[in-house]
Length: 377
Image (cartoon, rainbow, N blue to C red; front, top):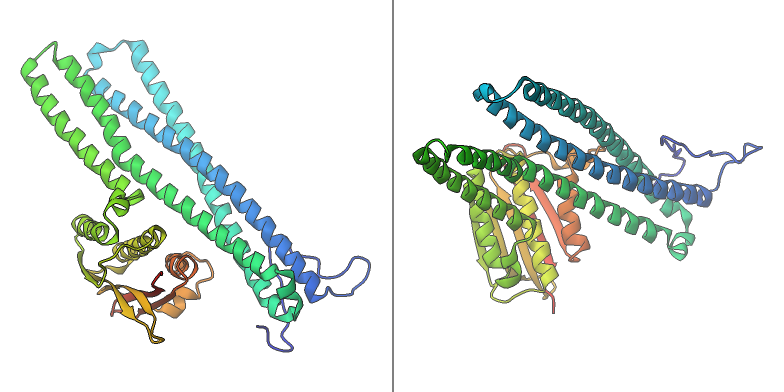
């Protein structure tokens, strides 16, 4: 809430005209609140358009990267077996490689520009939302009647959910490109080599086929891990606890992080949306540990406890022995880049499950995030 006598300054890329046209009469708080809400909605629409362009451009970059990989494989084969190709073939190969590289460079530049616009629009959206929130206490009884605050908060939640979805889709697409997609491209090349060897040396072809089988199996396992990260099927079949046991085992093997899972009084199945939200909460928390904490150990606690008011609650805690951080500084980060993970965790608990979220951390003493969720009837 603004203190008495405090002067409010509205700073956005397209600032509102605070004075009414033709005179110097300042806008009322209600008018300023309405215009800020309108600009906030406009920023949300712009962000949606930018993110749609980002998806298209990212897909184009991915296709060009795949083409570049294919052309590079052909060039490597050309270097090894140059006597098998005509001068025209060699010229066409290098021309294709140059064309793909130039187009890829151009599209990457466009992608960077869109990402910059996305960050700038998010910053403007955050500033507008702060302004709307600051103005609401000054509206008196009019704000609850109009429902503007509820609309603004709901729109902000929807925008955050969409941004989180797009961020996850981009992460998965990049991992698929760097993992299975490149592996499959190499598999195609090795299959072509096997095909050529069949006419020259059957024993070498047989050995290459054995190696190809091993590479296919590795790619299959990588693909299964991606599917598990995207939506673990055993979550629906077996429930939350078996899914968590498998997940902490996988993340421990992949990241060399020792993860201990402790479960108490979780003999029953929870509603599906509870299990999904709790699993995503723990998944996001452990991903943050792996990416940022520089930790060697992590502990996950999940159980049902009695609350202070006599009700039963689901208690979730993820703790690590990593480097830690100053919580107040991260939460005060205006850019949103550092506190985005915390905001995601908070929304999963407070918005989706109507629970309570807390975080404790200190430099050199690790971090603990925890949640208390009302047990569903």
